[in-house]
Amino acid sequence: MKELKKIFQQNEAWAQQARKEDPEFFNRLSSVQKPDYLWIGCADSRVPANQICGLQPGQVFVHRNVANLVVHTDINCLSVLQYAVEVLQVKHVIVCGHYGCGGVLAALDDKPLGLIDNWIRNIRDVLDLHSRYLEKIGDPKERGRRLVELNVATQVTNLGNTTIVQDAWARGQSLTIHGWVYSLKNGLLKDLDLCISDKTALSKAHRLTRPE
Ligand code: CO
Image (cartoon, rainbow, N blue to C red; front, side, top):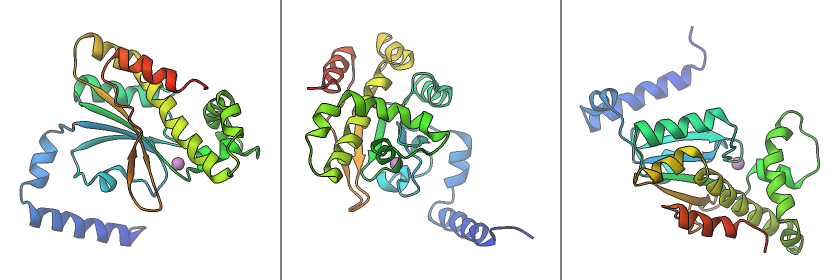
């Protein structure tokens, strides 16, 4: 007997509905994927890339981890990025954070959480770098929101500094990287206006992620 029976029933209903709306849906998707976007987002169950963006299967390549980090030594994220940029030739890479992110808020807290502290250390580095600015913000909720934004901006510059993105720009490939933040409260995306398509724009954005 199947475990999680309800999910299999829902899956059957979904596949049937998809075929009803478009009889060629699965035939088309099983032969090729040609997404224009790579989404690097948080693993949080409330932030599903496709639904938020109104995109169908096949339209967005997705990598998710705790607090949407782009770490220079993370072979998982870098492999996804390389495949998306070099094989799928996506046009846009989006780093999307979200307000109320547990990973980011954990960085503001001193409570030990075990192994994941090594991952969250990357956000604590962002926090340390901007501590003077963040300490001036009296409201803890607002401080958390600003750290979410600073974290996204930092990950966008990390992304731009990878060999994968640098090589793509060097060979003239059209590739723009973006920083967005999603609100759990109203379901809307906010563009942090970090649309970076070349090295000049990257160095400008890099300055934004330095302390004031
Ligand atoms: Co999160």
